[in-house]
Length: 175
Image 1 (cartoon, rainbow, N blue to C red):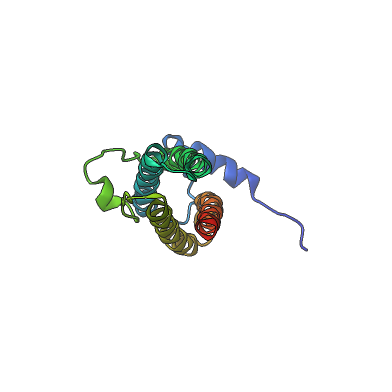
Image 2 (image 1 turned 90 degrees about the vertical axis):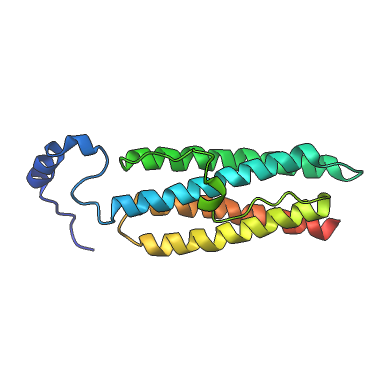
């Protein structure tokens, strides 16, 4: 391994230029407006997931519902954490998180499907998680090394979505 060498004088000079850009430095290698657009789609996807899981939490009933309701609530809360993380990253990239309910479903990668009973609710949540897994993995590949911070954020969210999918599959196997 070679010694780490950086031109600190040049880095310090660049840091003073365009301070209004905050975290986005001249070294940023992605197209920030495109990344912000995609992150707003992720934001919409996570918001739709929060809403669906919350509805399922309140609507779940029956003899097996208590443990499943707890799972729905836990997933809703974790999806809300994703909303907060993505919105924060959008702001760091000098964008504006789009919380406008108009067009939310259109911006979301997943659909809002209510489900009629516990099994259909679990299945709809599992489908939505699988959509998120596939689209978020594509985002990770798209970002590559151009924006490692956003890539790591999406990778972290992706890991949780995979855990959710596994949880939901386990619930289906038990019912």
